[in-house]
Length: 332
Image (cartoon, rainbow, N blue to C red):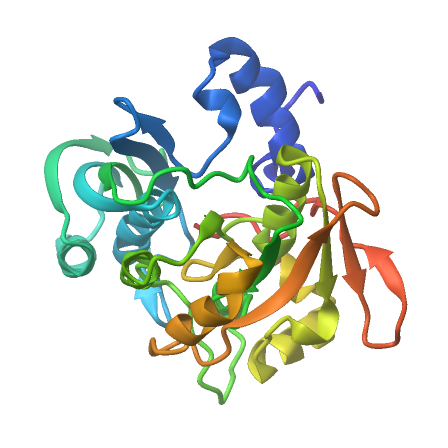
């Protein structure tokens, strides 16, 4: 560990993993925490429990704002464990001088997204700090959900599973970068920020055999796949030409040297589905508005344990590593 915390420690990649494992996991070590899931399963498996903080810059961007993001972020973590979001807390730290009209707009976005999930805010806290102490507004949301499907875990993935994504990747990260840098674009690019519970509920109702799910936020799809490979002691092989990427995101990646698989998402999730149900899962996901490009992108093997292999369109293979470096900070 470095002596001082860097921006890279919050990127969702290698430095972030080192920080959490060597500082927080070391201090708070327990059986539930060590499972390293999107949400903790508690109360004899009946409830899922998760918390998240949001510091995105800018606060308002194409497709969403920090308010929608704060609800989607926590509710999606619960949904990834097969749980229906029920109760949330909301804590806000507001900079002195922040416009009340903007706060009201943010809260209305939160209200609308709570309705999508069928959840309510039942407790909260507000702090106002002197000008310059925070950047406008920070939000923390903590959520409790009712587990509808038991046994979902990223520690249980095997060679009986195929890897699926629910839509095209990288839209949130690309949108934030464009907004932050003031890049003028004539395109439909917008954040994928979206509540995922309706999609998860449809899969559960269809009795799809789900092994694991994870929303690909900081560090993107690459971070998720590498975490899964290590947690389940497997190798994941992904076909590059099957990973759905929009023309807008692809163009930004080419211009700026990004890799779409490492860009953050807020409405994109990765699934490990039993082989016999993978095609059916894709069909269900395609019935949703943003799911037209849902697809199977890879499989589980034992070629290189705890590694992710990218099969290129040229017939070559390379490791798809956990992202490292500062990437794009203040993304969520």
